[in-house]
Image (tube, rainbow, N blue to C red):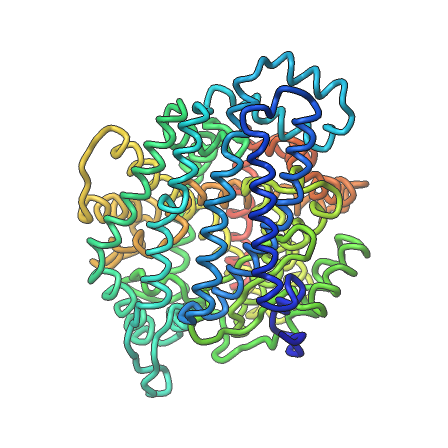
Length: 591
């Protein structure tokens, strides 16, 4: 495999020079897993055994992380390519083997006298790199099963991912939505990526066609998708119960190093600020000059100029200038990312839709985009690079056990970049209509990330609670819950329509239980942080970079307290609601 010359594509030779090297490394990891298994039953007999096992474990994790990245990234470049599917299945199988081979580590540490483990940690300096991980295991003691039970769950790990994998395959590779007539009267195929263009069209008929086509397909498969989703919910609920958690939410927030109080305080803040969202939706209907505003109308920006596109090279310049406030080192690494294949930029046939960042320890972050040049795409560049830079700083400053961090913190770094980008654009824009467009998009960001994600989280909570209480649910039950929540969050200015009840079926994040509420906490924290950065509080940028460099050496809530943000304090959410209200008034004053 030769080095990739296209600077807008990933160069996966940064991970492995060729597939032969990839398969050779799989053999090496399997050999190491056998060595790790040799310590089964004797892991905690001595500090020597504990150290030797962890030293092997550390190397195996680093190798596996690169293998998994290589398999997944190849697959996501073309999800219909059989070779790519095979590579991904290889690493999924290896993941299952890895989990099985190492499943004994947690229970053996858990069921050894805590005083003995602490004595090892105190007396053997070689265990220092692994101290936080080992102490974390001890903290989770009451949620750890027996060795046999942990091994059993590990063997089933691949099966537990099945609902998500089937959903991804169905909706990404097999769904064909048909064609619509665009603004120019041309018949064009609708894809998941182009949907984001057509749903923002100035032409209401184009928007309606796109909306109806998308949800016609989802409605056709609604019973199948319901079964997949409820199976996913059930496995999460059962696993949480097995691990002695009160609920799925209790398990997930504990895993996030957050708390149910964070979730509850967030929802309290959202409810208190719901009137602001209703006010925004009323303003939106007024701006669109619609007697009835339907769900397919709410995504269009009334200020966007038809055909406005930002070439990727221009987007790079804008993002670099906007984020220069974060200092020279941060700026230099952004330049490095753009020039060294961190980003696979453009849409390709059967490529994974959307965008994400994958941090790879021992290499560099890999960012997937489907760039088409609209305003959302420019923000996505800043957003995903926020994730990428967070991974870079963390990986550079921590070992592999301490470099990872929870989504609770990850969504902060990405959203800070979006806020900084938007405020930079507003500051440097003189055209009132363009300025109104930017403010409108910022309001959309807050609506979509704070209010909509909170609505998603409330949907999840209601579904999980019903499943945990033994209620049988149908697709119509899920549709009704989702429809009712839309009414509550949107207010009277939006005419929902029949298709809106299927919206839940199009949310892939529901297959990562209670993932979405962290978007809402993330933007709340990000607005607090970005405001302080823009106010140029003395030493605050350095404090922020320091936080990004901590990995998981502190719990998520405590990491954010390093930058003066408390997610259990209602004030954090009052700040974002007030920011939202201020921007609504700022938009009104421009008109």
